[in-house]
Image (tube, rainbow, N blue to C red):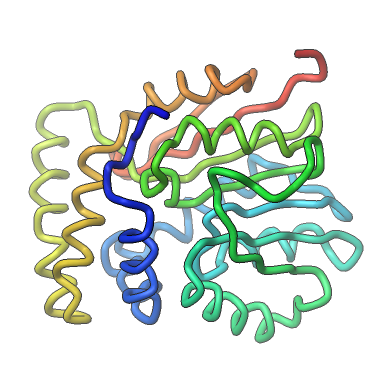
Length: 240
């Protein structure tokens, strides 16, 4: 297994349980609220059909899960999977508040080994989780495995600007994230980890290559906010 995140999985799970209550607040603070726009763009490009069966891997507090549930309608269904029990507790409250209990199943599980048969889902998503798994390549192979031929998989993730001046500004900003977290929610150590994984994760171009290596075709991506984040989409071909 080629590790893309060297922090032990148990430690990562514990950390996400500890920050769950403040996760949404800090996401909005760090991204200046733009993460909501990124997700809307992703949904437009996925063209999720009514009645579809979708999976949102590393679903966290459930925002993308709920967006998918709205898109698939009452005839469809969405699985939201995450390894953090506390994150899923918050997601569950959101699902109930949205009235989507009839079309959402929340599962505590491992993104590296999805508990579903091959060719089960019509669409798969993963938002801001790929940099936190031990092996991103393995997770991409799992996303490919569980979707039907012709289906799309999408990843929203922090990225790294390539323009030198922008990259310097991006690095300076993310170096402030732990201090922001200390002031806002008193979680400096936990957000130092998230700052580290952001800085160490692969470039948007490299992630596109990883999508292709996992088997996806028609792989394309777009960046947001001068490269601070990226949306990657790939299709499982009808013929291998």
